[in-house]
Length: 398
Length: 142
Ligand SMILES: Cc1ncc(COP(=O)(O)O)c(C=O)c1O
Image 1: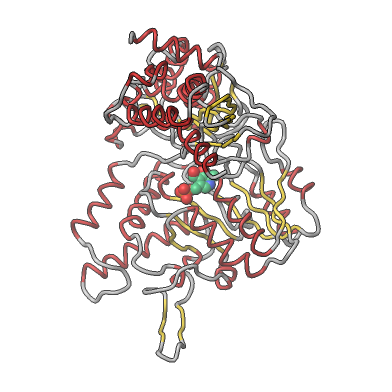
Image 2: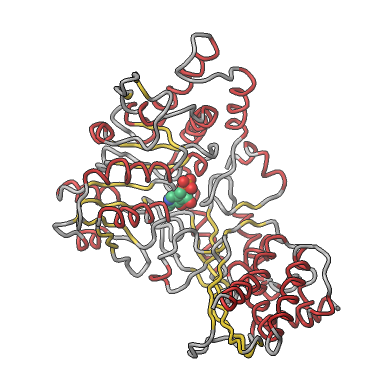
């Protein structure tokens, strides 16, 4: 799909590491370059044409994001440097204030570090409990298991919408409903789902959500924190400085700006915001349903072809996203990845920052192939051909 | 050294590592070593007596280069004095980092003399040597 829009693909690279970051279409790069070459200025600060243009472009992206995730209002969209900053702001700007000792936060063992470590640190700071939803036989989180894990101490459920190793899609609408019924806050890490599947924060009753633009064809260093307006109002910013204050005086009185601007301290990643806006346009033009369908078709094809290759173990055959975790029997994942690199095929090896998933799948390392719009069956065929030559894995080891 | 011979030695040490499995003797000094990309993860364990490396063992989960390098290192260091071991470690690190080194002290470790060509493998080969450095430091401060 749309391969011509991605100049980098002309190099012949077979890029299957979309879970880590995605390629950028030319229109996104052009949009960023346009800002730097035609109207570089700061935002919210100027009285001249280029600065006004920056303000307009910058704020228009808030509306685009609002529409993408169906937030109730523009002010619920905060620009951050990515999922990690968003989740940290949620945990240390809000949860730290309202949670108490022994309150339980429910996560899973397949979460990414950025949805685990902040909670562990909060446990250290104020004594919350971190609990894990049991994974089912496909290493997925089911609604049933979420229900079962809830106790009268559960105050927060914080889950990835799609996980980055197993790629299971959590039923966030159902989980959101259960959270609401039980008066539990619902936090969603949308890093792997944004730009892949539809998200409706109102329908799923999501209280907070975070994502990164670079995993949805946008620039690095920019992302979004979504929060319900009244919750963001109660959330502290983790940074103070220019652009986010209404006034301050020598007697130490001060007032911060309103939500969302109180979170955007200092000069923002303007080029990033503008580039992210273009990426959203691009994705919506293709259509999220079509993107998801394409990924699923590639995954199904890849799984059926991989099964014909001897000695391949697939860990997540039955999940509905474009992510495949696999190993060649008795070959360390990194050795496989380095071997595939000889064929110009990029897959990621390791634990993919999901370091406690090993408790569940019994193995610390996998190779991960993750697909996106521009990947093709022909590329999958090349992966299969390379894996069929697994006897040669160590031929070029030195 | 012939490329094929090098590869065979490396694969032999990967598939049948020397002294894999730790001892429960508390006299051993054991350290864990991981690389930043969080893939290789090894424990290296050494018994030192009167300035001599009596035994070296390891366990863990690591790629072919890291596992085999740990294995070859263990085999090479047993019986060496700490001073000799230091010279070996330094020369091995220099070899991997493309600095001048003395191949005559490296014995079988010379099979890694072209690893520098693969930047993504350098940390794998160096990992056990970082561990042995830690162990020697710990031993000095004992
Ligand atoms: C599920 C998940 N959550 C969070 C993140 C963190 O995203 P970022 O590094 O862009 O902050 C990632 C990225 O790998 C991810 O896959």
